Amino acid sequence: MRVGSSAFVPWPDLCCLRCAVQTSRAWQRAVSEELIDGVGSVVAEFFDVGVSRRWPWEDRPEAAALLAAAAVPGRDFDAVVVGEYERAFYGGQFRKVVSGLNALGVAVWLPEAGGPVELGSPVHEALR
Image (cartoon, rainbow, N blue to C red; front, side):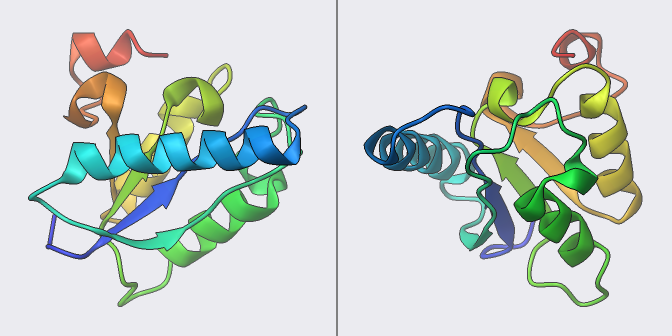
């Protein structure tokens, strides 16, 4: 990952109050920044509020915006840092989203993986 080239993707619970959303967002941002400390920095943020993680990424406004941004040649990031797996993925979304982003040259980082996700890794496959 190039320094200064990651996007941050926090995902709040569906039924959060404004204060809880802000706290969740701040917590996930801090976890993400700690994960990429010394390797990169956050250059964009995508944060869906009031949208269930059960919805496909293409149907979540901010997630869809992230997918569209990832497909743009010359984008400002080459990695996505998800603040927490449980806030971002549901069912088979993990493999689909990570594979799609990887195909575009975008790595996906998770705190639960300790860094970039490797889909062939049995440990990382267990996340789904």
